[in-house]
Length: 185
Image 1 (cartoon, rainbow, N blue to C red):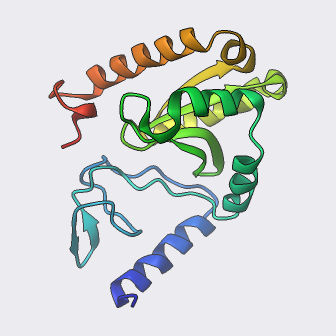
Image 2 (tube, rainbow, N blue to C red):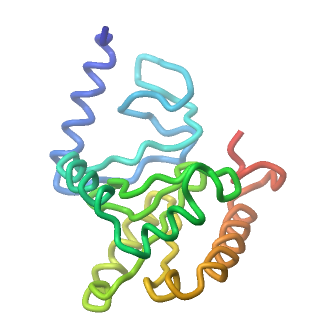
């Protein structure tokens, strides 16, 4: 049974998506969350003290993302099965073809607030769009890492090592308590 607060928050979320631009949330832990909780406690204003911020997304992208998941490129399939699937990469959970804002990220780890993009031949023609997209996602506090199809298909081991190093660097930058993952408690 859906509570009255949840129905109200669902309406707020729908209104946010109908706005022409989506603003990034406040800081991750103190942001008021218009959707269902990841963790935290409920108040009259919504859910607070979130471990991860809510990232709004265009609901029209959900079906496209589902189709993309069912039809991955060769490079997406390789990195997914050999590195990211089933928490095999440093025990982090990654999502494939995740709608974020008005984009679909190839891979997304909410715990790290990290997007991994696989750039194929089509990306050569849209570098400006990719830059804009990366800037928009960084407004939400997300990091974006890009790898080319060729790099993944020809040298998956160096991609794996590079990803480890970049994640370690990201953790150290964002974590006042370096003993925990990204400072998330």
